[in-house]
Amino acid sequence: MSMPFYVAPEQMMKDRADYARKGIARGRALIGAVYETGILLCAENPSRSLHKVSEIYDRIAFAGVGKYNEFDQLRVAGIRHADTKGFAYARDDVDARSLANLYAQYLGQVFTHEVKPLEVEILVAELGAVGKEAQLFHILYDGTVVDEQKFAVIGGDSDTISERFEGSYREVRGLQETLQACVAALGEEERPLVYQDLEVAVLEDRGERRTFRRIAGSELQNLLGDVD
Image (cartoon, rainbow, N blue to C red; front, side, top):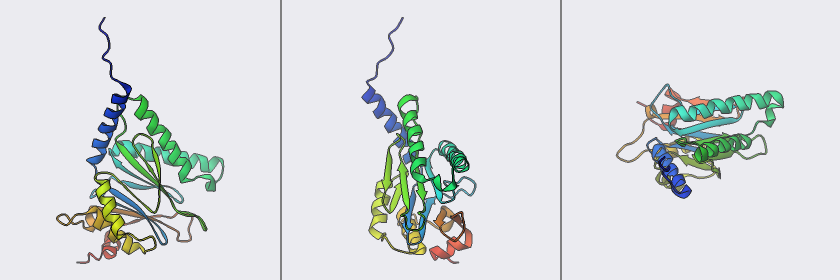
């Protein structure tokens, strides 16, 4: 009987982390940013059928990068959890923090115990009610949760994009300025992005229960100043 090949736990964790990071780096980046009346989620995503950004609950949105089939399963699970909790207790009891902790537990469990980690990074955003601040929770492939302040960048080349965005971002600014700063940071001089390359959504209080809204087509074109 042959002895099983031994791999040190430290090396195994390092290999899993490298594997997950390489998979995520192949995906295109996404920025979530707080502006004066809401939260903007802007992703480079030319696909019209596969969404990186979606609604989870009344004031909560989900964004994911990496392998689509993996983060979409997390999105669906988040919707089911939020619906069940809101039905069993009250709609106000559904919050981004508990949802982010749930995602963190699942991702951490997979990273530690499964052969292959999930190749995803996700962002859970919640628009604060009156008198409360907006919240952005960045969850990494290994279950680490980062409580971001004002903005978060996830996906490939996130460090470089974060530096570019931070240089032009101010805490209090309108939707159009914030969107244009996001697009400038996601693109490059030799590869500028146009509205067809983008998926954009906002969480914005419009006096209705649900705050999630997609921005596309002529509205997005006008906000970018990309008018034919």
